[in-house]
Image (cartoon, rainbow, N blue to C red):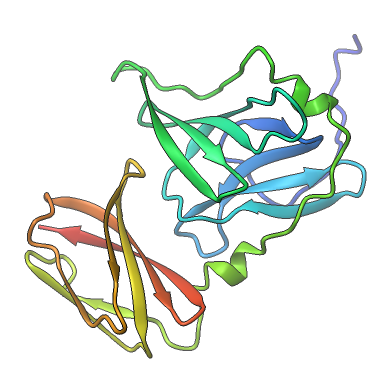
Length: 216
């Protein structure tokens, strides 16, 4: 014990919660460059490289993350958010699913650990694929899709776009509420949604945009 701290590396990103091991890499969640969603990045301690590991729509801020590896080929971790929800994150399929475990409403889980978490650090350091979230979650195209009215009661409309073919709507707990697939989408009926804030993932060509709407 030296009772001291040693700087290992500067990653250039501020983790929003836990650091955890995954296949020998240190992983953390951070706010995406677009400032709207959170992504999970992996730091390789052998090469000193930082890569995007999880790019799917994720409006949730995972305070706690822990490896659930039973072997070094496992593709999942546990995660908790600041609303007391418990998730399994699947890196292979780029999805996350909420589990039935619910923390008390007056408690917030900032950290997470499990009994086999150490296997994540014992695995041989793997050179993980860089998913380049900036390219997949493209919100900085020459044209910014405009949603109006916002807030809205019944119908929202889109303008300043080329061709929208797919839209998914999520609430702030990470639950997918609605999915629309058409040749071309110019408006959406939201009259059946409860009042609140929702996140839209909009596919235009090969690019994705993330937008928030308020349902009155």
